[in-house]
Length: 277
Ligand SMILES: NC(=O)c1ccc[n+]([C@@H]2O[C@H](COP(=O)([O-])OP(=O)(O)OC[C@H]3O[C@@H](n4cnc5c(N)ncnc54)[C@H](OP(=O)(O)O)[C@@H]3O)[C@@H](O)[C@H]2O)c1
Image (tube, rainbow, N blue to C red; front, side, top):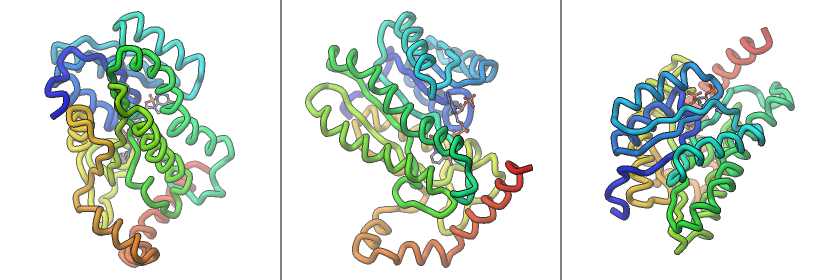
C-alpha cells in the first residue's frame, strides 16, 4: 500500500450529488478525506454535503457546470480559497443516453463529449500545476467498460470513455516520478444507483451488474495502492480481452448472440420515444 492513510487529504469530487458520486463521497469521507463536491443541482448537492459532514470531515458543496470554462475556473478558485489545496481530483460526473447514433442531436453529442471527456481533461489541467509543485496528488477518472469496446446504441459514450482510458494512460506515464498519479476506473453495469439503475432494468445475464459500493471502493484502492486501471465487474474481463485480441469478432458474436445488443436496442427505442415526445 503506497498511501496507507488518506486522512486529512482534500478532494474535489465531480458528480457528487447523486448516483455513484454519493457512494464515492461516503467511501472517501469514511477514510477521513475532506470533500469539495460539485454538480449543477444545488439542493441535492447541499444535502449530500451535509450527510457527508457527519463523517467528521469538512465538506464544501459548490454548484457548477463542468462543461463551462468560467464555471470550472470559479469552482477551482472556490475550492482553493477554502481548502488551500486539492490532493485528489475525482472526475466522476458523466452522462449517457442509449440511442441510435443519428437520432442524437449534434448539440447533445457535443454536450456528451464536453461532459464526459473534455471537462475531466480540463479540470485536471487546472489542478495539475499545484499538484506538481507540491509533488503530490492523484487524479482518478471514471471511465466505463463501455470504453473498452464500442457497443451499438452507445457509440458516443464509448468514444468519450475510451478517450478517458487512453488519456489516463498517457498522463500516468508522463507523471511518473513526479509524485502525482493518475488512475482510471472502468465499471460494468452498476445496479442500485446511477445512470443505469434509473432505467429500472436487470442487466443482461451475459454482463451481470456490480454495486456502487464496489465502484467506490475501487476509487479508494486506486489512490491507496496507486493502481493505474481498475475494472469493476462481477465476472473477470481479462480472458475476454485476450480472446478478443486473438480472434477479433468472437466477443462481438457472444455479446450479440447472448442478447447484450438487443438489450441496448430496446432501451434505445424507449429513450428515443421519450426524448422525441
Ligand atoms: N451507473 C453505471 O452503470 C455506470 C457504469 C460505468 C460507468 N459509469 C460512470 O460513472 C460516472 C457516474 O455516473 P452515475 O451512474 O452516478 O450517473 P448519474 O447518477 O447520472 O450522476 C451523474 C452526476 O454527474 C453530475 N453532472 C452531470 N453533468 C454535469 C455537469 N455538466 N456539470 C456538473 N455536474 C454534472 C450530476 O449532477 P447534476 O445533474 O445535478 O449536474 C450527477 O451528480 C459517470 O462518469 C458514468 O459514465 C456509470
